[in-house]
Image 1 (cartoon, one colour):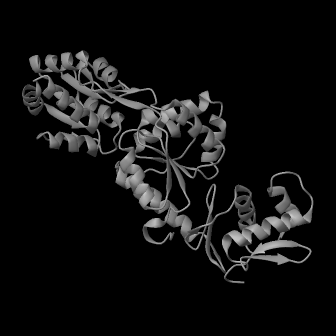
Image 2: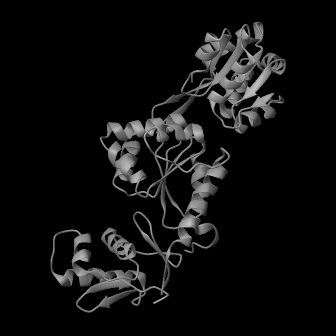
Image 3: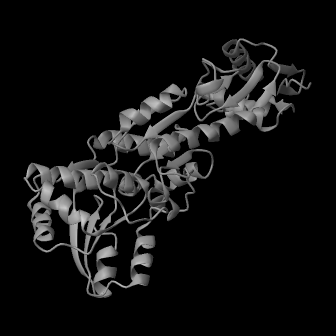
Length: 372
């Protein structure tokens, strides 16, 4: 397998924590060479038959709002679909068309346009706080405001507008439910804490919060946070999704635009940069992932202990690593130099390049760089 072109993520093991559109995301990452694991932290439960949603919709039809705040694209589409199933879609669209529509980000705007409507203003930051700042600065006293919320429920907008004198109608179109496979979720947090994964992908703030809560429940949150600070990549689709991670000191990679395609591109860019930093050896470019190694675009059949030794040799490129250090990187507590020799021999066999690792008599081993 070649890491050239779209295979730049060869050897990377990526965890997807989302349920919705996970197959699409997995396919995009797999095309780039990644190996994907899937452990949704939450499930999405549509409210198409939820009486509070339909009751709120009827209330808006009977008493039209001045302002409608749309916080999520999928939520807005689900709202229209639920109204359509109840025979209320035409009336709802007429009411929405007469109101000022405010969208939280481009995905919400796209859903509004798909319904044949236009957003009057878009919070490009995708933050509810930006919506609150703008509307409060204009004044909301005496206005009737409808707020379509995401699955986690209210995000503070209702309270802020009500305290400023507005009448608020809150609509929750879908809710977050329990993880579809709790055992897979628990396994995923333990694997990250053990350093077995290269990247973890988050596509919603509630999902990120639930995944981190699962790590805490499993007693391995500290290990997870340590891995995020020492090589495992956290990737969030947007700044809202990044929030729960940031509050725990994790700085995820975030695309400029909140789209799955942009998220994949951001991860690819990260690994393309890592590829340029790979060691240029006599056998080609050498990279070590969390659990495997890639040499000249080929995933090497190297054991975990072999990966540890390669990582040790790469830490001081071109310099001699003593046998004692190699023995320390291997499982067990052997002090027999022959154990180190066997490990190096197996590495050479796995790489198919005997010249890659040079034995320095009575001293140890070193990687042969192209500049040697």
